[in-house]
Every structure is written in structure tokens, then in C-alpha cells.
Length: 146
Image (cartoon, rainbow, N blue to C red):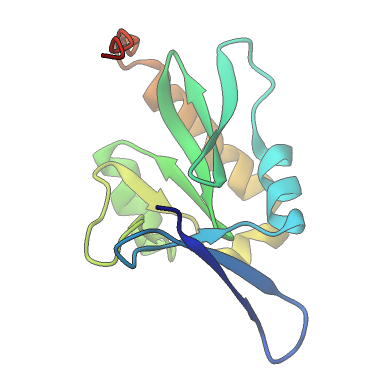
């Protein structure tokens, strides 16, 4: 069974969010074109980095480990504990793809940082450096269809 799509626009008319409602009622926000372009501008030009879609959104990986992503209009980063604490002090928050279920090691960056590209690029580099030190993720073998 498939989900259905809900759309919402802000009163100012400047923002539009699409949400995929999965079976069971869980909503997954969809990024708008501006958010996708912003995310793409942040992905480091590094041969270890790959980008792929994730549940209607997009994420960047290093050695098979997700280090940053876009969830609706929110950019999230995988960070060390010390960096998560620092980011929280600067207005970042936990990355919760489902309310109340934060993904450990991931934080969203403050929305106001969209106007501060140098700041975001430094944090993206921290995320890449931290995640690049993790063991490479092993590809899981495909299950045979019965």
C-alpha cells in the first residue's frame, strides 16, 4: 500500500513544504527546489563523498557512512559529541526524523545559517572529518527472492 502526499504553504507564500505520509501515518517532509540547491552547494568536492536519495530527501556519504543530509528544509550533520554540544549552544538541535526519536550523533543546523555560508562550510567539514574516520560501512548482501 502506498502513502499519500500532503502540501502546505506558509502564509507569506515564500515557502512550500511537501510531506509524504507513509502507511501508518508517519509524515516525511519533502525538500523544495531551493533547499535541494542549497544542500547540493554544501556537499564537499571530495572523491570519497557520494550523494544519494533517502526517503524522498537526499544525503551525502563518506566511506558508506552518512555524514550530512537534507530532511525537508533542514540540513543535518553527523558530529562528534563535543561538536554536538557546541552546535547546540549555537542554536542547532537534535535530528528527529520522527518526533521524539532523535538519531544519535546527528544534529540539525540553525536555519539562520543559510545566510552564513562560511559557518556552514566549516561545520560540514567537521562532519566529513568525523564521519570519514569511522570504519567503512559494509554493503549488505542482497536477499534472494523466494
